[in-house]
Amino acid sequence: MMRVVRSAVALLGVVALPFAGEAQTLRMMKSLDAPHYDGARTTWSPSSDIVNMIQDTLVAMDWDGKTAIPYLAKSWTVSPDGKLYTFKLRDDVSFCSGKKFTADDVVYSFKRLVSPELKAPLAWRAGNLKDIRATDPYTVEYELNEPFSDLLLNLTMFTTAIHNKESVEKLGKDYGVKAIDGTGPWCFDSWQPRTEIVLKRHDAYKWGPSMYQNKGPVKFEKLSIKIVPEDSSRVAAMMGGQFDVTHQMPLQFLQQVKAAPMLTVQEAQPNFQLLYYGFKANRPMVSDKRVREAMNIAINRAEIVKGIALGNADPAYTYIDPKALDFADSTKGLIKEDVERAKKLLDEAGWKPGADGIREKDGVKLAPRVLFTQVGLFPRVSEAIQGYMRKIGVDWKIVGYDSTIAPAEMAKQDYELWTVTFPYMSAGDLLNFYFDSKNMPAPNRMNWNDPKTDEYLRAGKASLTDADRAKNYALAQQRVTEEHLWMPVMNVGMYVTSNKKLKGVRPHMLYQNTFYKGLDYSF
Image (tube, rainbow, N blue to C red; front, side, top):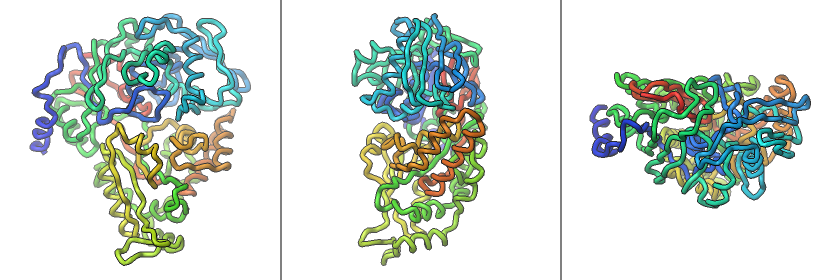
C-alpha cells in the first residue's frame, strides 16, 4: 500500500508545487468539480458546497440535521393556516461587493428561482409560492398557495441562497462561472475548471449562525480547493501533509487513513446518503415493471458493500434510510434479492436468452445504457452490478463521464439507467426532489408522471400535523418502491478527514457539505 501512496504523490505533483502564502491559506481537496456555481440552476452537489461558502440562506441547518435556525432572517412567524411566513431580516449584512443586503435581495432571489424562464430544477424547494414582498427594508412576507410542511428545512439549502441582482444581471450567462456575489463568509476569487477554486475571506462578515462559536470573519485569508479526482492521489496528499482537509476520502482507504497519526477522521451524524441506480421508466427497454424488478433483485448488496465500500456503508433495500424522518415501515421487504425470481420475471416479460446468453425480444438485445460519473465508488459498483446482470442475461452497457460533463450527458436523455449518490434530510425531501412530475426531466430523470404519486406528495407537503405528513409520505414511498423505479444499493457514510493541526473541524450533514461555512476552522 505504501508504494501506491508514494506513486500517487508523484502523480499529483503536490510536493513540487507548494501553496503560495501557505500560513494564510486553508488547503482543501475535493474529487469533483461542477459546470458552474449558480445554485439556482443546478442539482449538483459539487456546486452546492461552494455556493454555501459564498452565499447565505434565510435560515441555517443546525448540527442535528433537522432544526432550522436564524441566519439572514433573525426571526420569523407562521400564520395558523401555514401559508404566510413573515421573516425579519438582519440589518448588518453586506455582499462581498460591498452592497448592503436588504429585503429586496430576498424578493429578487426567490422570484428568479421560481420564474419559468430560469427553469430551476429545484424551484419546488421554495414551495408553491403565491407572492413574496418586502413590507419594509428588513421584513419579507412569503406567501404560499398551500402549506409546505418542510419549507424551513428547504430554505436551508443552497438552492434558496440569496443573490445580488446587480451581479446576476451584469454577468448574464457567465454568472457562477466568471464570478458570483454573495453574503457568505468566503468570496469568489478565481476558478480554473477541473483544477482549482480559490475563495478569499469576506472581511465584513460577522453574522454567522449560532451553531458556530466564531460568527466571523473566517480565520484564513484564502481557501484553495484543488480538484483531485484520483482516489489514491487524495489519500497520498492528505497523508503527505499537502492538504489540510477533505470531505471526499475514498471509503476503500478509510481504515488506512484512520490509522495515520497525523490525521483525524470524523463521520457526519446524522447522515442520509443513498447510492442508487435510477430507471428511465419511459424508455422501451425498462418500461416494464417486471424488467426493473428483475434487475433490482438480481444483485447482492451485502457483497458490494463488503467488497467495494469495505463495510463503510450499509446495504440499502429501501429508498429512505429507516432512521430518517417519515420513513415508511411498509416499504421493508418490497425489494427481496432473488436471482431465480429475476429470471422468471424476465421470461414473463418476453425477454428470452439468445445464443450468447443475453436476452432478446423482437430482435432487440436487453442491453441498457447505464451512465456513471468516473469518481469514487461509481466505476467499481457499476462493474460489479454489470457482472450480476450477466448472470440473468442482461448486458449492462456502462459508460463513464467526467463530473463536469455528466449533467450535460444526462440531459441528452439517451440512456436507460444512471447512478448518483443523493444526500437528503427526510423522506419528504427525497420524494419531492425526485418523484414529483413537475420535476421532469430533472431531477425526475425517471420521467415518472403518476397522478397518485403527485397526489400523495401534495398531501404530504400540505400537511399541518406530523401524523398527516408521515401518512402521506408513506403512501408515496410505497407507490414508487412497488414500481421499482430505482435500484437502491447502499447508504454511504460521509466523513471529513483533516490534519490534526487544524482545529474546529466538525462535519455537517447538509447535502454533502461537511465543510458548510468553516467559521470555526483555525490552526
